[in-house]
Image (cartoon, rainbow, N blue to C red; front, side, top):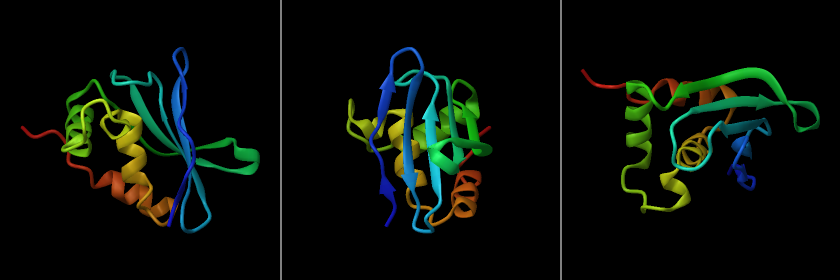
Length: 116
């Protein structure tokens, strides 16, 4: 089972959470604005000393139709005001079920795009 780290929130820099997947690989889920606002969510591979390697597995602009559709899908049924209702919480909850970085990338690619 994946190990989800603590959520780190900086009102100026956004928010992030590190996850250790079943494979032992580590990923960083980050939301550049934090909270419930739009912005961008990125999932990157973490390498040596806990630094993001620059390899991005997934990124989405939450202000565009695709990002809005993905976030609506991931937060459906989440209690209002809960961590799962935030962009960071929703994507962490989704990504933690991937067993490896390749699986996380494939799961994110399978998220429903905007309809229409």
